[in-house]
Image 1 (cartoon, rainbow, N blue to C red):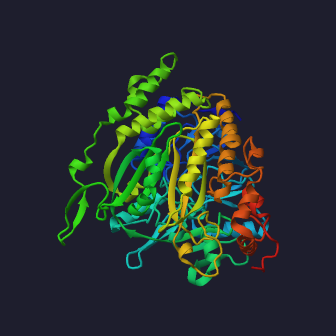
Image 2 (cartoon, rainbow, N blue to C red):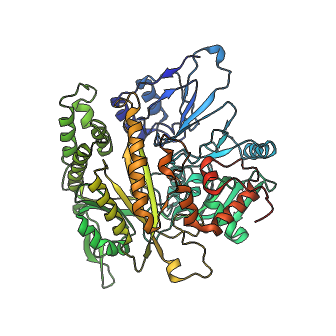
Image 3 (tube, helix red, strand yellow):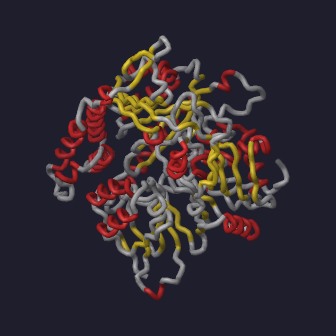
Length: 636
């Protein structure tokens, strides 16, 4: 067998990123971020990444233009597979499969026959039953978006990418029922003609619904809970004597709340019924505040706006504040033009004048383009010509600027952050669009991400912990000189009643005002990773990974200890999991167990023993945090 290597230039990466907006989700789940190092062993490599919708012909044209060798791009699948097998006589031989996650930080290689994509529910049930009877591993995987590879296990995996039907839209009950392999974007598209949408989104909409709820994805809004709270009913296919189990709050109570955010450990989530709300447009305002202004105004902004997020820029006295409100419910003290409401009062509307940007796109991007030109003055890279640079958007420019210098040099990163600050100052303004567009945003290129959640009082009376934590973190970053790119992102949600949610208030004998109105802040830090063009050997990625885990993440945990932080389940890394810096994560598993307490840990393990008595759904991360599956499946 001959091995192949794809060489993708930065020009191709930018072209691919722009063209991906026209790709159909089903046919091309793979190409959103082609900045990964795509070296193919004698196996299939599945890039199960973010995608966009439209013409299949656009995808085919891009593939041809990029001249990707030995690629298999089958219509109707959700994976882009590179075949490392030239010989026709070997085509019938089954290959191993390698899967990379969206951020390019984790991968898993599975032996032939260890990766499954059932095409029907009957086939899914048969696969799970066989795994139970024979003790074969079938760890469920969604869109492979989790930065920590939570769904990865080399012993065996199962994807529901083919099981993506929208089963029912019920306007009377305001629910939608879908197969768990349906992507959030597909569900939104199906709801749109009915004038409906989902209550909230995470930063992107390419998660499979099963993963979306199972890891406790969240958006932002002080009165809006994480997305697992939207689940009204679910079906899990369990590798146990119970087989297929249908659950609601009424039928299963605590088990239902464990299963909806069950980390893939209680069964293969096959069908989900979610709450929906009327479709609406959001008015978005982007403003840049000083740190002191952002601190002073936060309590008011949290109550005034339906959705709000802060983006702190390290080494700059700047916080980018993005708010979103329904166009028919604009706060009187917010953006817009005040008019009579026809009832003797006043209301706000958004006019064409309000929406007029103060600066053109070229003016907004000028600071980034200018800085990139300076970085390229003494370089021989001819692929980044004027036309290519002018075709880049904000995220692409930031990625290339960072990668064009030493990404671990604080001075280089400071200059990048300064240029980004200047961009945001010129990008301030107002926009309006459907909520499912405004609640998504550009996450940038491949990156390490670490996000923590912690309590910050109640909706009615938020405490100072939101700001105190970030201020202390920034002080440590800037005094120690860590090369911290922008942004440090901060969002807020209300509580979840799922016991394993980072936004859970914990077991409660009696509900109180504080538990019903609890407020949580989510803070995410990142370090971007260079593409292969900027890192052909992969050494830069290794050094960045080491710095991120051993410096940045440790610092976040140190600062956050007194605030009661819990890491997002898709971003927690524990000792012994993949990566060169396992020692940097010592004590994480213990802190997670302590955060949830013995009552919740015991309840989850009892449920695992009931629905997965042979541990075929588990993975290294679950076993390190919760221990191996209990052998006595009759106790719960």
